[in-house]
Image (cartoon, rainbow, N blue to C red):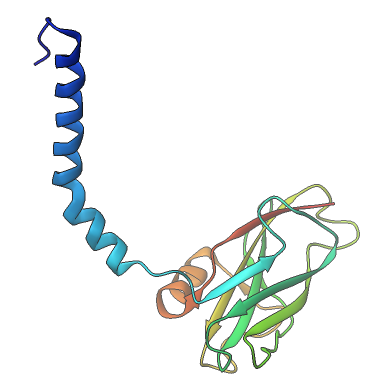
Length: 154
């Protein structure tokens, strides 16, 4: 309850409320931070919102260079995730792949999402394979994966 009176009382009451709320939420925040970890596979290029050509180089890195990296691209207008050509991993964990963003005719001006999945399995996915949203979610539950990067096709 806010009391009318001296101006400092309202500020102190608000500050006490904010501190009490923070203290009440701290255990949940600490637990979430302790259980969440940064992805071990990342896409370094392109970045969110970048414009890409019909063929574009996707680059990234993976913490464990012994993992196999699979890059998937999804046109938002059509749906479905398309597995891109194989992306060998260097000793330092860097990888790159020349990916497809539609065809010369299809995909101009459209949005595409990119995700990388890392696995110990050498033949987990094959180039040209199309995955549903459910297939991707299953992969993400069982394998390391990057954040999704949204791009637009030139």
